Length: 197
Image 1 (cartoon, one colour):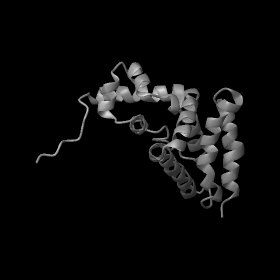
Image 2 (cartoon, one colour; image 1 turned 180 degrees about the vertical axis):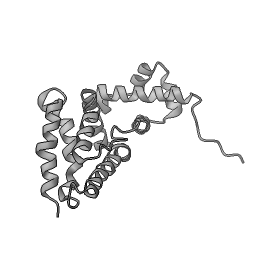
Image 3 (cartoon, rainbow, N blue to C red; image 1 turned 120 degrees about the horizontal axis):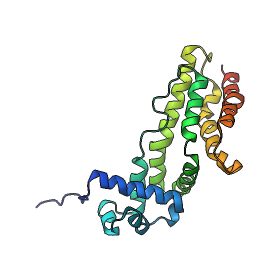
Image 4 (cartoon, helix red, strand yellow; image 1 turned 30 degrees about the horizontal axis):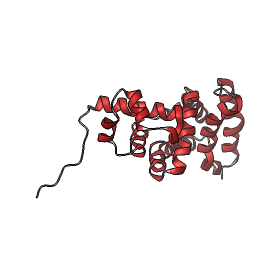
């Protein structure tokens, strides 16, 4: 007896990418609860049936959309010193922060209600961020900028990305260059330098 092959969409990879881009845009605009296949289909100019042939549920589509996000903004950062690496990271991530803020808020809510989405966010965003920041600290130790790995490095991811994401909430605008520089020079670097063993 033959076994039915898994259901697959006949759309091209390029067209599938357009569907996922539409899902991300809609997610940032309306949030996870209000997101629907109908809304994504309208934005992507396709039928809802086309989306359901590829993804069986809204959650499955959003997971695919999250995992389709391109290279993280920290790829290739290695300025040769700790301050430069952290400042370049904050500058890159802050670009387009207004849209990122809406998207992050939508994702934050979604991961609270769906473990599959939470796992996708950890895998796609949080784990690569943590590995990159750890590599920044390791390089700083190897160069002699830090005598050893600081205890506060455990919280470096929180310090960097929380500042970027909360800036638009407290000031109604993304962090400007002066503010980003002050956060690095007056908060993050002193913390790292004061907690080495």
